[in-house]
Amino acid sequence: MKTQSGTSRIRRLVLGSAIAAALLPLAGGSFAAELIVIKFSHVVAADTPKGKGAEKFRELAEKYSAGAVKVEVYPNSTLYKDKEEMEALQLGSVQMLAPSLSKFGPLGVREFELFDLPYIVDSYDDLHKLTSGPVGQQLLARLEPRGIKGLAYWDNGFKVMSANAPIRTPEDLKGKKMRIQSSKVLEEQFREVKALPQVLAFSEVYQALQTGVVDGTENTISNYYTQKVHEVQKHITVSDHGYIGYALITNRKFWDGLPANVRSQLERAVKESSEYANRIAKEENDAALEAVRKSGKSEIYMPTEAERLAFKKAFVPMHRKMEARIGAETIQAVYRETGFDPDRM
Image (cartoon, rainbow, N blue to C red; front, side, top):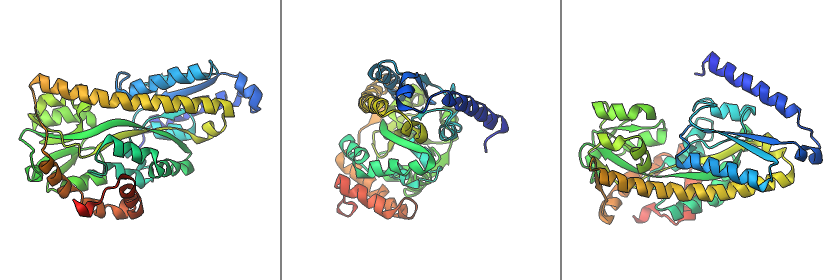
């Protein structure tokens, strides 16, 4: 539940934005002569792939608009906290965000939870075929009735699993308390292999693993490394079983109200900054894997093809269980785009 002070804070910022917006003339030619300010808020550090992607967008937006646009980037929740930012965008007090895809389920667009399904894609090629294809674009379009315009998908990366005992087979997860982010799909994922999912805030994970409150977790390897999770987990299995990503979004009314030439310049900045963000996300995960390996604090295990297939066979049946929540047609559309046939594993 939002605190009164948090709500008041949003309202004050909304009022300020409304006054600023009122000062901008509506006529296209005179609007273009005014400086257009875009507040881009996000909740991670500036030196993460998302943070670097936001800075790249700022650089390109200001360059391509020849100074007609100024982008103010607010990293590390300095403008809005994790639970505030979506409402702030809808109210118009901030113009751009890049929230985790998991944030859209609670907003009422449960189809985005397909990205939580284990092994819904097998590679970055399949992933980008999905996000740039009809399914990915249709999902972004479903945000529009909520006052949100989806612009692009940004990768974080594929997930690994860890514990203080080796994880070589699905049976190794049985009875283990596994930390997850809040997601009905991820809860079902671990129940499918008789593990015990535990929802914990990301900020609590290190201590929970260190003290044995939970036995293991899942995340991208870059998050393991930057948060030092590998220091309290003896075994990491590079299962690549799931995906964590973001959507670059903007306030729909703001976006639609831009002069056509400015919107075109910003679309170019979105495209190029998204390509950059996705490239460095993979590079940083690769570098983090090597850094964890060199640290000697966790044993890195790369499953064989047979072991990976065993994990897929254990996890994929829960896709069908999630059809009522996510939509059978949405899941089938992903299969068609990627060529995956769960019945032929």
